[in-house]
Image (cartoon, rainbow, N blue to C red; front, side, top):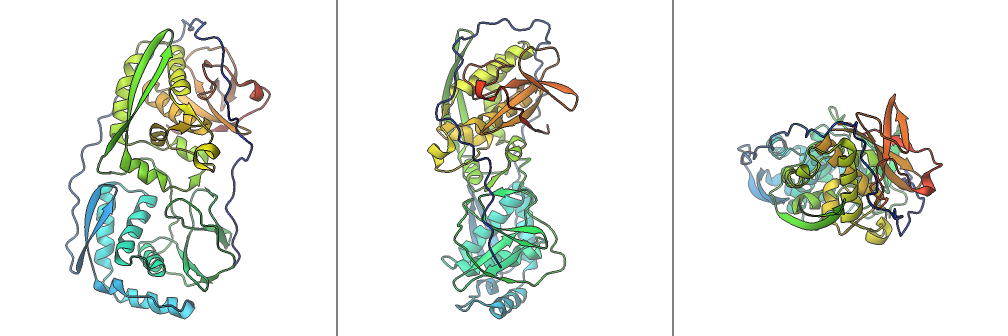
Length: 423
C-alpha cells in the first residue's frame, strides 16, 4: 500500500509586513444605521458534576487529562505485550487476546468520561490514547493496537498499517486534514493519525491489516462546536489599542489546558476554525470588557472599533516565521500566542462580531490572504460582495487602521471565495 503525502493548503506567500492605512478615524459613521443591541447573553455553562466512574473490577489507573486526574479500572489482560514480529498473524493473535479481556466496562467508563467532560471525537481519541500510553509506556505498537481495538469496539472505522518496524493507526475523517499523510481505501482517505497534530511523514510502503468489524462505521468528526471541560488554569495577555482618540486596555484571559488541547489539532480547512468556540470563561471575560465599548454605538462604528482592536492590539507575524509552517489558530489560541496572521485575526474578529453584535459575517479567501465581510442592517458604502442575495461589506482585521469597506490594494481586483460561517 502506497502512502500519499498530506495535501497542502494555499501556498501563496503572505506578506512579512502588512499594509497600513495612513489616516486615522477621519470619517463620520453612517447615522441611519441602527444602534447595537447586545445579543441576549446566554448563561455561562454550569460547572460540570464530578466525574463519576462506572464501578468496575480490575486494576486502578489514573489518567492525567487537561488538568483532571481521571480514575479508571481496567482488566489486567489489557497489559498484554504484542511481541517483536509484525505481520498479519501477529496482529490477529493480539486482537484475539484483547477480545478475551473484559472490555465492556472500560468502554462504559470512557463513555461516562466523554459525557461529563463534553469531549468531541478528537478529544475522545486523545483520552483513549492517553490511558493506553499509561498502560504501555514506551511501547508504541501496543499503544496503537490497543487504541485501535478500543475505538473499533466503540464503533469507529479504523485500520492498522505496518512495516518491519512498527504499526500505524489509520482512520477516516469527515473533514479534510492538511499536511497529514493518508492512504486511500475504496475511495476513502484514511489518515495516519497524528496524536500531537504533527505529521511524521516518514512512511513509504506499508502493509495493511484488512479485517473489518461489524458495527464499526463512524469516521472521526473534528468539529469543535462546544469546548471540552478542562480543569481551568488561567493565563492572560494584556492588549492595548486606540480608537477615535481614546486608548483602551483589555486583559484577555485564556485557559492553558484548552490551548494545550487545541495545539494537538491537525490542520484543517479555515472554515472549521470559524465555527469553533472558546473556553466559556475566556469568552465571558473578554466579552464583558468589550461589550460596554460597542453598546449604543451604530453597527458601523461598533464594527470599526472591533476591527481596530484586532488590527492593532495583536502583533503580526506569518505562520512560517512563528511556527516554521502553516498553522491556523483557533480564536483562543490567538489570545495565547505572541503573534497572529490574517487567518487567525479573521477567526477572532468573526467570533467577536457574532457574540457582541449578532451580525452575520462570512470569511473571504484571497490568494495568500483571509479577510471577512459583514452584513449590516442598513446601507454602508465601500467595497462589498453579494452572497446568497445579501450585501456584505468587506472588513479586513489584518489591514491596519482600515475601516469597514476597505480592501488591501493588492486584492482590489481579486474576486474572493466566500467561507460560510454558521452562527
